[in-house]
Image 1 (cartoon, helix red, strand yellow):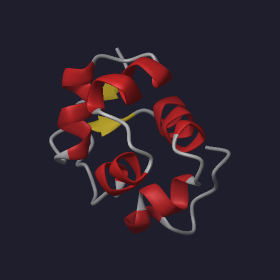
Image 2: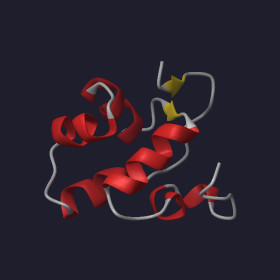
Image 3: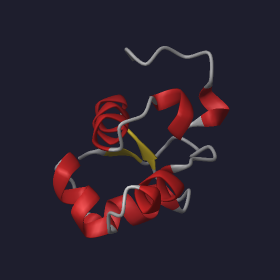
Image 4: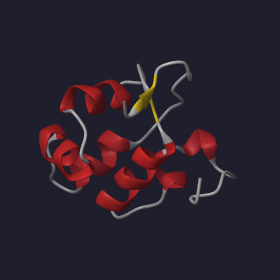
Length: 79
């Protein structure tokens, strides 16, 4: 499973970066190899992504984890 259901999801900017890149949720989910339903839940703060999914999202959106997850600034992108 790609999502840690026990972690409270902090604010994220995935939707902002995804829309800026012109990607649908389905396309971004395909690029990071996860279900679009899980991506939707992550975007809306209902689920927290595992570190490897955070890395994949940042890579697919050509940004950093710190930019996507501003509440987690100070944590390493190498999580």
